[in-house]
Amino acid sequence: MRLSRDKVLNALVAVLAGVVTLGGLVPYAAIIASTVVRGAKAIASVGIIRFLTSLPPAPGSGELGGAGPSLLGTVLLTVLSTLAGVPLAFCLALLITEFPENPVSRALRALVKGLLELPTIVAGMVVYTLVVVPMGTPSILAGSLALAIVMLPYVTTHFETYLSSVPRLYREAGYAIGLSKAGVALRVAAPIVRKGLLVGVLVGVSRALGETAPLLFTLGSARYYYPTSVLGPGDSASLLIYNFAMMPYPNLREVAWGAALTILASYLIISLIVQLCVRGVEA
Amino acid sequence: MRHAVRVESLRVRLGGREVLKGVNLEVPEGSVTVVLGPSGVGKSTLLRTINRLLDLVPGARVEGRVEVLGLDAYAVDPYWLRRRVGMVFQIPNPFPHLSIYDNVAIAAKVCGVARSKRELRRIVEWALRKAMLWEEVKDRLRDPPLSLSGGQQQRLCLARALAMKPKILLLDEPTANIDVSNASLIEEALKRLVREEGMTVVLVTHMPQQALRVGDYVAVMYDGRIVEYGRVTEVASRPHHPFTKKLFSGAAS
Ligand SMILES: Nc1ncnc2c1ncn2[C@@H]1O[C@H](COP(=O)(O)OP(=O)(O)OP(=O)(O)O)[C@@H](O)[C@H]1O
Ligand SMILES: [Mg+2]
Image 1 (cartoon, each protein chain N blue to C red):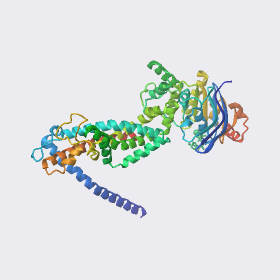
Image 2: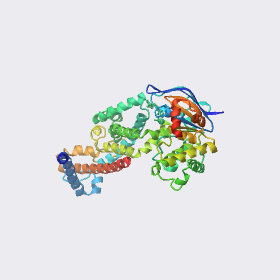
Image 3: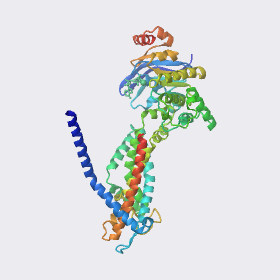
Image 4: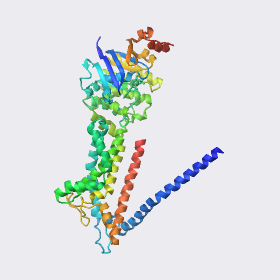
């Protein structure tokens, strides 16, 4: 009697949880489905290569086109901001985990936690004031810096989590053979959690791929020509979507859907790699 | 007689609690000194003051004097000190990201005892032989250490410590977590290291039988103090302190 009541209760909970989960997933499924359907249509109508490389069509021309400059911009922004943000995040995470008692590293930890809460547009504002105004022009470099600021706390927090998860007994083994603090961090702790650190890098890359607000006043909007220098204006896929999606021209909205699908596909690839890594970390 | 380690009126506080309450100990060169005592009396803490691993414990306060190889341990560079003193821990802790070979090689490299690749290979083989592991791993040196059994891992850790060519070897209950046959291999390895290489061994254990098997001298710890010290045979046959009496009456039966 009692057993069967438990069974019923279990089944009930399972069904309820299933229904709630599915219900919650509906909007996401709708977003993904419409992005895939519309984006695939936009990309297919010009061909993948042309979509990735050609310029957007003139507004209202009725022609189709690609998002070449913006996608190249996203690639450059992602690479540059990762190059700037990840090493700094790694150093910060090392400081915080290896000198947990030090007042400086305590302050840095608090700062990093604070930066997590920072509205990302503030990063754009700061870079606008400190870089764009002195340089006299928005630029890919400035946009990358803004993105680096945005990704820094996330990547640092991930690095910190993984580095501090290294069991003490391995650190002690490192110190016992005479390794310095830096030696233990770089030759013992970091390599033990290298896959976790890669996850941290990919978290940063994902941020850089999708962020829009920090680029609003730092990047410019050079989406009809290819950038010639990272010191000049550029564009990103996210900014292109932001601009084209609200346009009254269907041919531009098509391009926006195509760009959205491209970003979505990149996310999918990254999240696959992360899944593989996380499995490796736990093994 | 020369002493590899001398500890004088050593007091250690951990987290506000006095863990060592005035320890005096002399470790004669070229012998096995066993530190024997029940759980929580401060055996590990004592060992960790000798190579200053205790420096890593936040809030640890050390008073008194520790001499290692005739030098004030708390006046020299701790990293320099640790390269001259090998240590094996209670839980086998080979570096999981390095191969069997590299686990041993890294210690030799850090301590700068090998000047060429060939010399490094020689030292790694020597260390693995001395740790009585060579025959089991010589065909799988590139494998990860976690592919070894726990007892083999512990012998790998011994080899890693030996690759530094240390004069002093500290072992913190090295056989507490491994099976009997692996334990006796380690005990045999320690005896040979002292006999053949003239090493000085400080072995922490809570097993009086182990003290009888490998020890030359024994220091019995109780409640943060060394309550009895002497040649193992003498202490075992004529114990004074009640705790030592209880310990060895159990071991004899
Ligand atoms: N970081 C610390 N902070 C506070 N107290 C500690 C700390 N580390 C150890 N202690 C305490 O110090 C005492 C001695 O610890 P220690 O590890 O030296 O004992 P032990 O003799 O090695 O015991 P065991 O045989 O269980 O390994 C214990 O009571 C322990 O609780
Ligand atoms: Mg202990």
